Image (cartoon, rainbow, N blue to C red):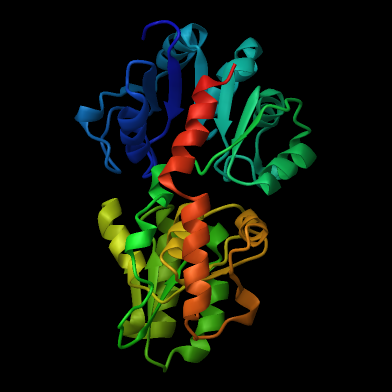
Length: 340
């Protein structure tokens, strides 16, 4: 890696190959270098053509990555997911002032589950990138952060779509209900299933994305879903290209996100842009953010099978285009890359 580049520290994840494509298209590659903290593997849309570097051994992290970080103009931490990276930053805290942390959620929610070393790193990072002001308030309270350098962004292009070209009207002969975004227990699928089971004999289809998360939890959800809803339960267990996944989202009628933390943002924003009826748990920080932006969302405690009315759908689509457009995403990353 050459000096004075923007160094991106990443993990294999469905959001990051599209992000690299986005940066390549709108900012170019010359100033950016991408590191994945894993052995060499291509998944979630990442291909050899992306020309990224893989680091995973102790020497990779504590020698090569450390050298890269010292050479970098800026360090973009796409989440804090690896203990070795926490250790590296803790013992080289002079690097933290040029770190920009993209706050994913699972890397800081439930502070009691995070290592003391992660606590120290989060507290002293120089720059924070958040999707919501609620999450900034959260880390101020829980981690006593020192820096006031805060940037707001929708993070990744996965939640930026051609909203204006998608009709919210569906001609389904059944009510299609999406439940959750992944096979993680923070989705609280069983609580949702308990709400929905009184409708199990109506003409519904339960679509549950489980192609992302832990196998043990996925198997548990599938067992419960099939037991209650029988053939009406439709789990998604294989990774889908983003285009295929968007097609599924555009064809559902109602979505339920019972996440007890900031999660499922890309799904939520896409569905709002598609004019769908979206139920969100109030513990999810996106609930407050969307309400603040006057977007009409619904409390899961008041669930019913009625579709969203056309007036509300039209208003939501207009607001989604305003807040979650490609232009707003470009502008947010431009501000981050150009910051002093």
